[in-house]
Amino acid sequence: MSMWEKCKELQDYIVGIRRDLHQIPEVGTDLPKTQAMIAAELDKLEIAYRKNKGDSGIIGTIEGGKPGKTILLRADIDALPITEQTGLPFASKHQGCMHACGHDTHAAMLLGALRILNEHKDELSGNVKFVFQTGEEISKGARIAIQEGVMDGVDAVFGIHIGSILGPDVPAGTLIAVPGCCMASFDRFILKVHGIGCHGSTPEKGVDPITIASNIVLSLQEVIAREIAAPKAAVLTIGKIAGGFAYNVIPDEVLIEGTIRSFEDPIRQHLAKRIGEIAQGIASTFRGSCDYEMDWGAPPVVNDEAMAELAGVAAKKALGAEHVLTAQPAPNMGGEDFAYYLEKAPGAFMFLSSANHEKHTDVPHHNPKFDVDESVLHMGSAVFVSIVEDFLGR
Image (tube, rainbow, N blue to C red; front, top):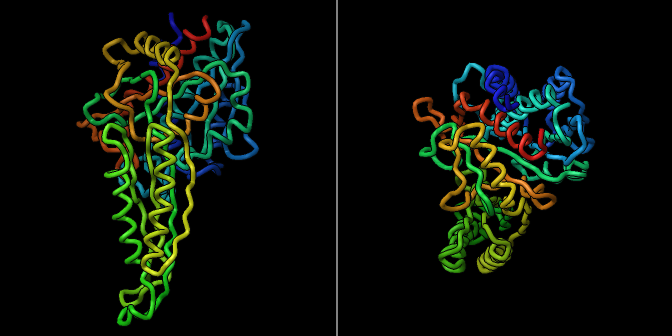
């Protein structure tokens, strides 16, 4: 009997872990409650681990009974600064924080896989390394984990992301494992537009940063429309504008924040360069100034062809060929700092759909009503275990 077949028996266990984690979402790299809950579960399972020094991440290893290669399995565990509106009985207890991207399920699925692998560790030819990673949403956690030594001695790395990431038309229980680029780079930019505040009735006595910011927002879209070749994919989105404090006062400053996405580094660099040039040029034209900062996130996620094929074959064993896709029309414009692991070792990042319209789990990620079809959770664990069996040998 294959080890992955036993994951179905853990469905209730995995769901329970997910619901417990869902209630205590934490943002960023300092996740004390999340770390404590995962560590307590690893203690129950008698699986060796260590806590990171630089954040709340956890790294551990299950040593196989025979020598061999080392495979790394990754789950991200941070949440988002969103107020949950799902109405679930196990909804977030932390005001303003929510697992709106499925990271609670990632941790639960990995724990389910580790439970099975640890029970059969003597049968494995090699080692299973694992990481519960912080800060994916801010693209900080993977680099911290690498600094903590997570990639030392690793021969291959795998991760899974849940949700309706490929759209509501991909049914729940479908796993996607594709070779090559599967996700875009993602970076954050910050613009601080400076003017001179004054009374709203006498704008000539000041410099209006709101007008300047408005012109910047509109002009930045011209980079996508007129400077990026039509066959190339790129996104420039403004997600935040903040400025002003009274209806009849022109403020001193306006803050603009946004993100850029691309599949190629030259386009990524061009977007970053032009944001600064355009913003500062417009600000100067209207007698103001602009400070520009690019908060570099993660490069594109590029799966190794051989590892993606291995993952696809392993997934078909565990889920059935009809539930596995090994090609997609185009890479996803979402980003993932899993890309940093793939720069250190070959591997594959996969997607597990949980889109079910009847259960209202086809809501987009990062939405206050985001939820998952929990019936697929044991499938994620099974895919992890099947990949380990195929990569290490049993």
